[in-house]
Length: 433
Image (cartoon, rainbow, N blue to C red; front, side, top):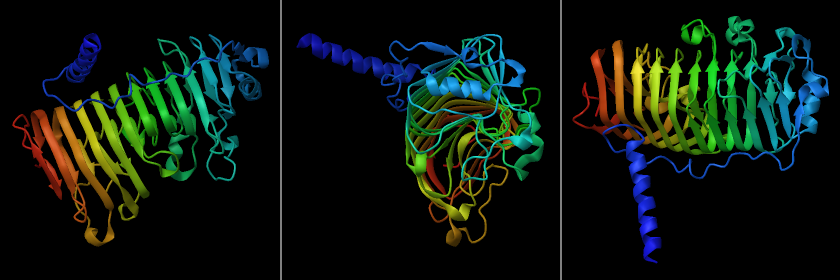
């Protein structure tokens, strides 16, 4: 009995120490959601043979369309292998069953079909099918998409063919799984998607050491590669670790789950964002949305519109929802265009940080509380504001905590509307609270 009690005590102490020291920081912040210990990776089916797509008729010469061959392999196999050194030209492929692994060997690439005028339309929709897609009719479970450690296994969307059209025509995503359980994507490179790179909704979603690269030769932001979200996720028990993105939109935009179910218990850590709009960002849209119990930590944001924070995705009059118990901890923000950190319940970016006229009567009906910004470091902020906190007079942001939020050098001061909170003595300049 004494040994059992001692062991239990050691486990508790180790957990607390890990919560403190994994930050590499001086301030204690509430431990992360218990995702790492409980994470379950999809296991390869017992006795499953790996099916090489070449055995199902794929050519892999980047000239011949291989869609039918790859679809046959997916339909008939549990493990589908894209072999090393080949480029497979594909139109959309449907992931048709649970217990499926897509395995990309080194220098194996799937390339999206280049003729944008003949890209297939989604059934019953004006939108286009994603390159890898699943319907919402049935829940997919135990899906695994895996590459190699050097990220040479890749999916190339040839988005440069689509980006000049902006929002004037629909554009496909690379991977769209709107209803999935126990999904792991690791060591993959997703490149130049026409629209979102990954759109994922479900339970137990794990993304490990992936790269998203859109228009890598430029740091032009949204205008150079519009709507190219990197890891657009929502649902429950979500874990992201060691991922990277260089793109034209959000890095980790966190949305609600399938059919507007709440998003909760999310940990995103050890992430680098370059050249888009936001790094770790909460998004509240149209409908009664709830996002809670989220921790973004140990992130670096280079040359984005904003480093991290919360925004809306629809006209503010239509927004309904709740966002609470969200922490941004250990975020380094360099050279933002608009703001280091922000909460804006009226607009998507922080370049507009004012309350519209008649906002009390028109909305939004958004409740945001228990939001913490800890150990934030801003560098080269002279052209941006330290923070934009633009909340609703109808439902002010409450209990917003600033702890050790600092700007090196000069910055424009915080802009603050309808917010209640507190700040520590380690903050410079003094935040809104």
